Length: 199
Image (cartoon, rainbow, N blue to C red):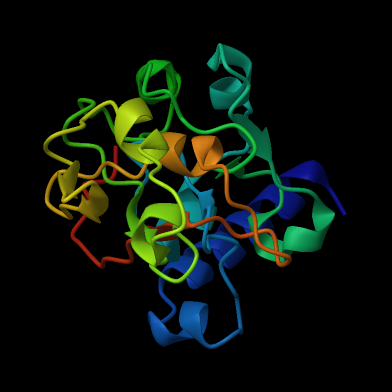
């Protein structure tokens, strides 16, 4: 097969992917790798068009000074080669260099405050402070938006969803790790279907 034919067929396949209904992504046909504590970098377009828009150039990985971003391997299927952040391993420190370098607009230019990678959720059955075993303020102390994204109610952490950017710094710092690898505070992805202007 000639290179030109291969590129045409690959482009057609990616166009078909972007036309699939949203349920295809949530019901396993093209299961997204974005799950608890597995997040796209800041400014990411909605997941249902991410695989079709990202050209897998790896520039976001190269520019990240914290090595927060890695590329998914072959096991990710159609999402192979796209960027992901494992929040409990190395969170996003919101330097915003990746959104400035993305050549396709897959990571849209956005400010730190407008970033919505996900939202922190406190597991009150695992959190030391909520269960009453010891007082721990770790998630509050490390949050770049403490006092707005995380507040303390009688020393217990409460997430304010309108202000949480989902960077994962709280998850990374949390001293609690369950047998399944989850923390007492985890980042849940925010799924939204929105109109995106293609560049």
